[in-house]
Amino acid sequence: MDHRDEINSILTGASGWTRAEILGLVDEGRGTLDPRIYTDERLYQLELERIFGRAWIFVAHEAQIQKPGDFFATYIGEDPVLVVRQKDASIRVFLNQCRHRGMKLCRADAGNARSFTCSYHGWAYNTAGDLVSVPFESDAYFNEIDKKQWGPVQTARVEVYKGLIFATWDHNAPSLDAYLGEAKFYMDAFLDRMDGGTEVIGGVTKWVIGCNWKFAAEQFCSDMYHAPVSHISPTIAALPDGIPAEFAKWPDKGIQFRATAGGHGTGFFSGPEKFIPVEEREDRLLLGLIGPQAGKYYARESREACRGRLGDVRADRINGAHMTIFPSLSFLPGVQTLRAWHPRGPNEIEVWALTVVDKNAPPEVKEEYRLGVMRTFSVGGMLEQDDGENWVMIQKGLRGFKSRQAHFNSGMGKGHAKADDPDWPGVIGNVYGEEAARGFYAHWGKMIATDDWASLYPAEVKTKAAE
Image (cartoon, rainbow, N blue to C red; front, side, top):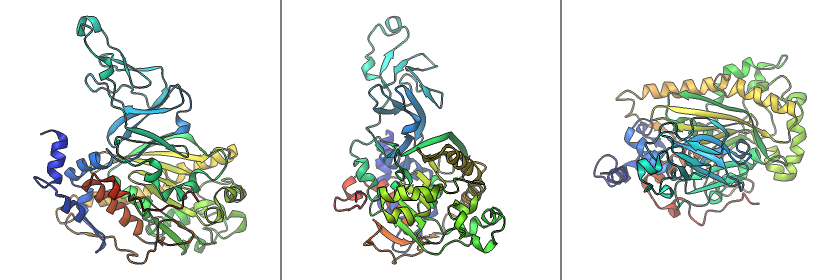
């Protein structure tokens, strides 16, 4: 039985999980989650094939591969891939794997290359992923090897949205535009605020956390609820001199977006109040953690340009936002961190974090954002430490037998969301809620249980993203 037969066997109930059991792990009606979704090895293998093997996955920012031959080595799930800029400016994504014995074609993280040569037996490939040279071809293979058949496996499609490069292995997947759907409206508040778009500064920071990938992706998708509790100590400690502690109180008014289809979500504060209600410092995001100046007036000055591009709603009413594009791309507009959650088994993730800034922002502002990400949401960042500690302690607790039997409550705000808000696309609930989390997990179950893309992304789903 090959791997695909094994997966189909599991899904049809011959062994392991049935489709009904998988869908029952996430009970939207009761608002519960079965903890086994974070620990079960069989479910994890299904995720690699049915989610990471089919969904649109973020692989790089265009700024990371600007010239022909530029490449960036990353992962789709646990599959190593190369993202390579071609001579005609197009982009190819293919397995970073030699077809002879599976060695990585490229062991560098990024760079510029004319070709990729396997360091094991010397098979060489061009930047398009074609096998072009085999050592001792006449003596060892008698010139009988068909090199056209032995290039690395290519992704089915590659598409770009506002500088972000996505790839999918599935020929039948919807277009990236349809896949992102209503989420584009909110993504643009991060990626398209200013003329020129965004760029990456400072490289990639990587670290490992001992938790399931869904804890991280779900939190950035939906969970503002943890912030006033988990992050209370660093936010108060970082208050600028002369600012009373009561100004660290988190706002009450906010929006949570759940994609009508797709599992994407975001949350943000929508009221006029800022984190620090002092005119001169009102644009210092996250209680001044970004830096001593932090583009003191940049957010205010750039807001007018943003309003001209995106309108009043997105220019003025998206503050302190968090977002996840299903399954594993997350970002924090304002803080300017973007990260990919690379799964490493059911109990571990590898975090890859970038700092993404407006390309036309002043150099001193870009530098302050880079420092701000390091201080807050990087491997040593004070807020990142809070989050990672929570996820690791949960995962450790789920080693127990009884711990995996006690269902989790995901019912916050259930029944109080609406899908007809005049300003905001999608299903809209309170920022302190779990509507987006329920959407994330419901989509997770459906992707594992069905091959029918039409049922996952029905044609009648409407988006305001183009408005």
